[in-house]
Image (cartoon, rainbow, N blue to C red; front, side, top):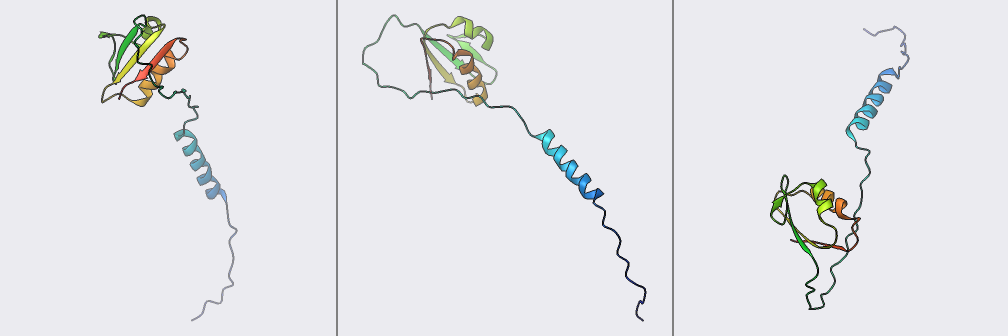
Length: 121
């Protein structure tokens, strides 16, 4: 038996589609970060002259995830900027040191004129 009732097309509502689009937009806005990334200029190593200058003050920093030592004494990022003015700084990274922690240290020290920073492998 055939259905002889006329086909009635229902109007298409876009309200659920718009709701889904707004939910996706809200999700992506809340999960993304809008911070800008700073950049630190790193220069290539230059060849040495073969002579050692005894008047250059040298500092040794050990950097870890939670540890920061300057010449064997524990310190903080805030204090290290005031304790180092000029000279040569050798930075040794622990296995658990993150790149962000190194960038934080270099950011604190980048305004120092006459400070030569060398990151050891």
